[in-house]
Every structure is written in structure tokens, then in C-alpha cells.
Amino acid sequence: MKTLMQEKHFDYKMFVIIDRVTYLGISMHILLTGLFYWLGYTNLSLLNVGCTLAWIHGKNLNSQGRQTLAILFLSAEIILHTIAAVSVLGWESGFQFYLIGALIFNIFARKIQLREVFILIFVFMSIFIGLHVYTAMQTYFHDAWWLMDLMYYNNVIVSAVTMSLVSYSFKEASNDSETQIRNIANTDYLTGLLTRRSMSEKVEIDLRKCIENKQDSAVVMADIDFFKHINDTYGHASGDEVLKEVALCLKENLRHIDRVFRWGGEEFMIVLPNISKDDAKRVCEGLREDISRAIFSFSRTNENMDVDEINITMTFGIAQFNEENDTIEEVILKADKALYKGKETGRNRVVVSENESYVEVEKEQKQVFVSNLRLSGV
Image (cartoon, rainbow, N blue to C red; front, side, top):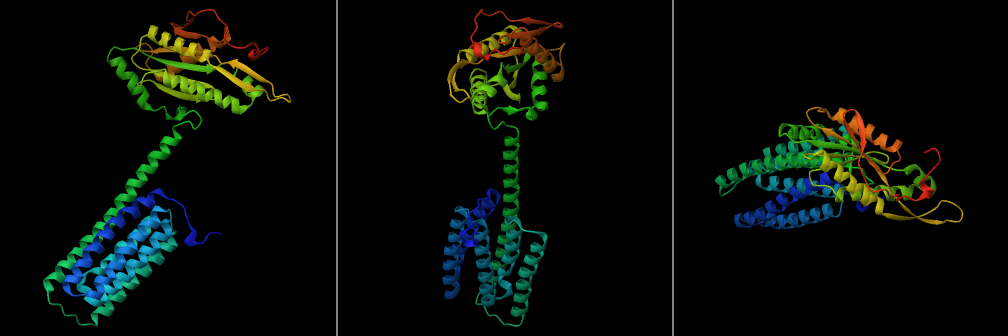
């Protein structure tokens, strides 16, 4: 089991919070080093030199991924510095308020249970109250009392800034993490395409804008032909390679305003805003031809490990999104029916949904997929 000194676990939210607080801590201790030296408190000046180095070390621990150790190290420094400063300068110096900032720092930056939160509150508040009791029994003399007032309010402000910075950094890091998680959830890990769940209202809003501007759009459902046979004959790794290559081809041959989704398995959905029916046909026919020209070399999953060179084909179904078909669900259904019509009539073709009928796009009559992909009854 790793000890605390050996811990190396990077936590982005904790890293952001600690990194920003350390900049503030280093700056404050450099300022206090000069201030205490000017006031004649040599010991406190030397202490702040050491504290500056401690904060630099804490920053390095954070950069190494040792966030928990960095927090414990910096919290110990804050406690020791607060005790020393308040003991020498008195309650009026305001250094005791750093304890509150350190408490918030610990609660936000560390992954702790509720019971541990109460323990931290007890420890920091005990030190806070203990310092107040101790300083109340002491008499402090300062040559510049006005400077003590200024230091008191400065320390109150620094503590408030620290708490605000910690809270803001936590919120910002949480938002970044949520965005990252959302992007991961909405992106297919294999192909890098958008997933079916990511198709939100924004897609329909974009399509409706086209209708408002008197522009047609198209929804395309596409499916890799004989994909199950590829998996069964050459293995799932070969099937994954096909999916990645097809996804790459789709992305590279579409406009920046078009959207490609991995709809499920070997099926894809393409949204083509602001495009005529004829242009949508040409786009899909171009995609079909590009994909059919790709050659894959796969080893069969048999004892001889025979190597085959095969072509992959796809079938496309197109439906228009316009004033007549103005719901995304209806258009997807029509595109899906056009796709399966293409499957039924031989695959490797583009079929368009037109007025409750399905019309195949004319193409050169050439068979580009290998006969060993033809399965009886498929």
C-alpha cells in the first residue's frame, strides 16, 4: 500500500484550487517578509522567508499530482504561521482569520466525509479560540498602531479573497469537469463521432432555421453492408477498424455545418442542413463511391489465418426536412425506411424517400464488394 508521501493521484479540480491559492500565498509571504523586516520584526521576517519556500514546495507537490499531501503541508504552514504571527503581534493583527480561509481550503479541496468536516471545524476553531484566549491575557505594544489597523483589515480582505478564490475555482473546475464528462458521454469512443444520445433540440432548431429561410435540408441514415459477416469472419477488431475508417471518410467528406452521428452498431445518421435534394443525392453517392474504393486486408479467424483483401460498401437512405416533413422524428423514420428499402433491393446504393415511395439514385453498375461477403439469406 502506498503511503501518503508516495501518493500520486492527479485530481484536476483540486489542482486548479491549490494552484491558484499557492500564487496568492507566495505573493503574500514575500510582501510580509519585507513588511516585518521594515517594522523590525526580524524573526517574523525570517519566518516568512521559510513560509515562502514552503508554499513553493506545496506548489511543486501539487504539480506532481500529490494534492492531498500539498493541502496537508500548506495547512500546517498556515497554522504555524498564524500562531507565530498572532502570538507576536496580537489579536489586532488579524492573522487569525487565515485559519478560516485554511478551513474552507481544506473542505473544498479535499475529498472528505462529513465526519471529517466536523473534525476540521473543531481543530481550526479550537486554535482560533485558543489564540484569542492567549492574546487576551497578553499586553502588546506597537510603535505604529495605525499600521496594525491597516494590517488587520488587510488580513481580513486576504482571507475573504482566499475563500472567494477557492469557491470560484471549485465552481469553475466543476463546470469544466461536467463539460468534459458531457463531451465524453456524447462522443463515441471508437469513432469519435457524436452519439445518438447527443442529438438534442439544437439539431431540430438548426433544421427549422433552414425552413424559415426557405432552405431544404436532408437527414441520411447509412448502414455498413454485411457488417456482421465481417465480425464473424475476421473478428471484432477488424469490425472496429472498418467502423473507424468509415467514420473518418464521412467526417472528411462533409461540410463543417453537417453533423455525423454513430446511430448504433454499424448504422450512422447524417444531418445535412441547407441542401437541396439533388445535392444530398450527390453527396451520398460520393460517400458511397469513396467507401467502396477502400480496400481492407483482414486475417480470417480460422486455423490457417488466411488473409483476404475486401471492399466495404454502404447503403444510404435519404429523407428531406422541409415544410411537408417538419419533425425530426418523421424525417428519421422516412430515411430509415429508405435505407432498409436499399438493403432489400441489393445494398450498396442510395435510396431517396419521395412522396411515400422510394427511388434509387442512379449509379454505375459495378459490384465493388467481394463475393465472400455475400451470405446466403442475408
